[in-house]
Image (cartoon, rainbow, N blue to C red):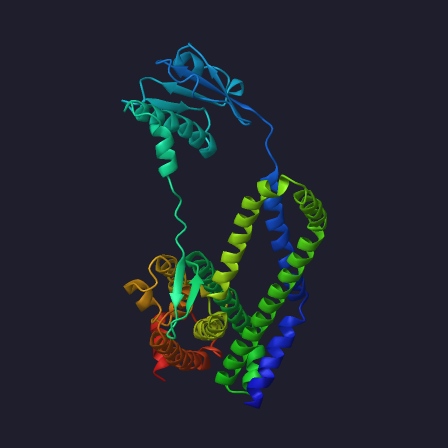
Length: 442
């Protein structure tokens, strides 16, 4: 055990002290927060360009319907469509051609453009025309105030989800929040397995190529060397992950404090205005609505068992990594260079990719057959089970899944150790799947 701990320390110190590790650990949260901030900033910038849309309306019914906005300006024309198509594209962005009454023929409108029409323009025009046609059809019933009655009848149902415990207490929950947490944790495990599992394989190949392993094997057993490398890189990954979380939270909190100073002053002035007569009643409803949404979110957060999710996340996090890392280590020991690892690593990568897609579909039905079986199969359970956990998986399923994962890890480690023992000292020979199967039987 002392030899394995020495190998773990060597792997951990060697990788953590690298400049690339330090730079990546500190730069990644900065780049991530900066990228998100840039996206938000660019999303707030309005495009002042006004796009001209030429309309050829054969019916003459829709000139008052197509209204201009800040982005689009409609110009009606009697010129033929064929002639307008020959016009330079810089003169107008798109051409709307209406051939018949849309109440009787919903396909009578076509939108032409030399470039692909963007979704915003298509949605805006379709929305204007749809609202007009609906209003016309309602007016055709000759019922007074029918439009107003229909608008009043439209209701946006806010369906609350509430869980009850065995003691009869109710807790408000959120399906959207559960889905977000499940997919986030599953994606983290997926990234961890892919990145650090590949590092295990590359590390074994490099040591084998440099002949360093020949010296190390004289002092330790191949199995001890493999386990030390796997656990050491796992600790490196956990260190980097925790640093990313800590730095991301710190940077985000710091930026939010810096950018909300001015907002807080405006809020204070706004509250002073509310104290004036007549202003308080006007602002009460929106304020209560915002406060209500915040309260609902906090209540939904309290409805999740974060302790259970965190503990099981660590278990599946380590179990999935150890399962795949042992296989990656076996592949690295069987080849002489990183180029040869591609043909052997593909069968290992396919279950990981399949697990992500299975997790996405399982989110829609966490108790369905796909979700259940994929959360039991050890090659997919670390990812799929994390998607299911926020939806309250039965304890017996969690226990069975973890048990199968542990047994599978022990089995794959045993098989990987036999391949590692033989392949780590083999040079100059192209290894096949058949050859690796023989090594398992030694």
